[in-house]
Image (cartoon, rainbow, N blue to C red):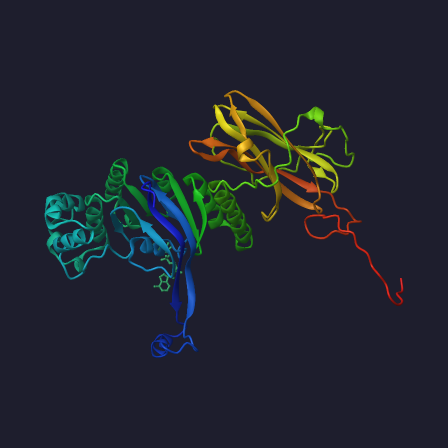
Amino acid sequence: MSSDVSIRVSGLCKSFPVYDKPHHRLMQMFAAGDAKRRWYREFHALSNIDFEVHRGETVGIVGRNGSGKSTLLQLICGTLAPTLGNVEINGRIAALLELGAGFNPEFTGRENVFLNGTLLGLTRMEIEARFDEIVAFADIGDFIDQPVKSYSSGMYIRLAFAVAINVTPDILIVDEALSVGDEAFQRKCFARIERIRNDGATVLFVSHSAGTVLELCNRAILLDRGELLAIGTPKRVVSHYQKLLYAPDSVAKGIRDKYRRELLEQSGTRAGNVRSDAANIAVQRPEDMPGEDIPDAYFDPGLRSQSELRFESRGGRVVDPHLETPGGQRVNVVRSGAEYVFVYSAEFDKLSAAVRFGMLIKSVSGLELGGAVTSQPLDAIDFVQAGTSVTVRFRFRCLLAPGTYFMNAGIRGRVGEEETFLDRVIDAVLFRVLPDPGRLATGYVDFGVQSQLTLEGEVHD
Ligand SMILES: Nc1ncnc2c1ncn2[C@@H]1O[C@H](COP(=O)(O)OP(=O)(O)OP(=O)(O)O)[C@@H](O)[C@H]1O
Ligand SMILES: [Mg+2]
């Protein structure tokens, strides 16, 4: 694992056995060797979770109750074993989990500090050196010499947090714990987390507070019913979370589908996954294109993409993406079978290297129907000066069934050693293909299928 990555979670799944009746647990124990009968159902608390946290990042996890947040943290800390997949950790973890920090209730606070410190990999001398600071931070007075079982939940969390942050962890994991303490203690904890972050540690925490996630995190993750539904800037992920939280059930399904689609697009971005096999569409200037207006296509100003998603620009910017007829008339309601041009300007505010352009047409459910890039990576434009504007035109025949479609636009270029998106707009354009009552083709794409019937015998027409 690259030293830049603190936590890598790949294909992580966790199922729990769920017994419908208490005695089924017992039956299962007796049936252990007998594969024929299972006395439990599998409950999938987490399914196929993939993400990385980089060194020094602060990442917030949000999601409804029961979405799998605590399970995920426990898998990362190793207090639970995954059903499938794995977790890689680079550095020393200190964790404050929902169900305690591994304190033994019979031991005193003092004894638990030593026990806990040892578990976190500190020597007795190291713990002794930090002991006064831990006790001062916890600020629980004489209770430090009482058994932990006599603590209030607030006192418990104070001591647990004091230990976790005073062992100078490389990775600090906090599960909602801070909401237990009073406000003054919370503020003290946040200030300390800030310091830990500034020292370069990685922080992963669960929070139900949108404000905390927006304030503290570089990135956030949305979990929903055991599925990772969004990962990205705190602003975007928190807004996704809130939309889902307040959506009625009938709408929530559509929202989930949309988020899954975005996530797929996003992982495409990370892998540099633009189709590169359809490179025969060249950048053309308007005069190359014959002016053939399609009278039946038109522009409906009310027809606008409401799901446009822009990624952060890295020197290039897609401006005014739209569809035109080959004669230059702006349209968004088109006819199947006719030719159209997808046009945008690419504006550069930085010197950009190895530049090429892309487009993609998708169905409403996000299925990638087809697209193109302007060149193979090796034939990209070597350099584009800052201040340059390039008009990009993709001419194509619309072979689509009547319905609504979306288009993506992207500028690719090299940043450092890697090709990446200099700008990317998902759902930049929405267009509709007019109904065609005579259409015989089925499915999304008209392949120009010719049908023929050969008859033997009689038919009645
Ligand atoms: N040991 C277990 N056995 C069976 N089911 C479990 C077990 N632990 C967790 N679950 C289930 O897994 C799901 C995820 O639980 P988890 O505690 O990770 O949720 P959470 O996101 O932390 O919720 P909260 O916001 O309430 O803390 C829940 O439906 C929970 O009932
Ligand atoms: Mg939880």
